[in-house]
Length: 230
Image (cartoon, helix red, strand yellow):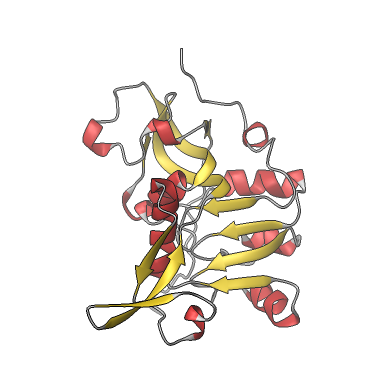
């Protein structure tokens, strides 16, 4: 019987080694796999390359791995909420590859679909295109971008079953579906474990064939920036 559920986050990340490339789902603090990230902090792996929309905030998400200097390189599209990221980047301690947000999502999707590269107009004529192949199609210039395949992908879903089928909740369907397919080994944390068949087929956002390990863990619903009236 197929059962991809493991007992803990620590067990799920047991083979994440130094210098691994991680493709991490989430947007800001929405839909991030915080339990798996916390397990990596405890594990103490170093030299990580993290591919994610952003690096969380200083005290949550990937920001925790930045604080402990376990991340060597970030491949991101937005990093404006993390002071420690800024400090490490400006001091030369952290290597950063900035990627337009749509390009980043497509690079993950392409990697998961077995597409080695594609052309996009985003970034042409800017530093984003430096050192990359460019080509004209129908009179418009495009930049060639490579698909991303990581050693591991870490995602967070609302529901999952023992077969690895995942359902995300609302905005958590940001980078998670693409990230899940872009890792050679996909590890998912879910809030609720259900029986196979309980998730309607049309509501399976990531099929279990892409997922290798599942943990069940409560997740904190933090708000990145809270704005209220006086």
